[in-house]
Length: 232
Image (cartoon, rainbow, N blue to C red; front, side, top):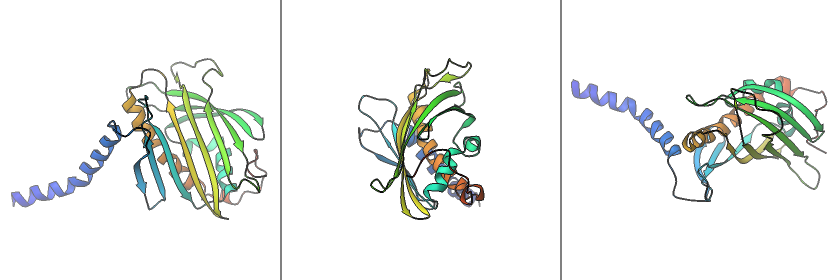
């Protein structure tokens, strides 16, 4: 009876052990440099996350690829709704739209919830849009941090970088291939392993969040003009 009970407990804990091992693997240094390594493969939601150790850098880069059941216009509406970012953007405590530079460029402010034991981070981000055209069949966006755009706001630590690119390529009228690649530098004295851990989780969570938002009628049925040019 005792042997059966112990065996049952062991079997029941195997998934938890496997998950813990997977998380620990995300924290370990990888011998391969400048090569993308698959970190997460979610076939059900059609999301893949990759990480890469850059030569001479302790903080990894990330790449995430997803197939979303949404049109380019729907994704653009989710992307442009800054007031709703708190509902889906990973570890975000505050979002404030700062400036519309043009119909293809804007600046906004975010506060990120940092791991326990480290100060929360804030960041000013600049997004530049390259619209989809007849000769360029995809939308391309470049997001870069502007750490000196405004004075520090204690107790938050200003992020040095949250730099990444986003590419939306239509597969058909209601399906889009979404690709994003970049890296973060949270500033301060955050250990590299905590940054790498967050960097492997955040892109996946953001893709899941955007996919869920893209199913909402407020975006799929909207008819108002978009505030920025994503398609020419």
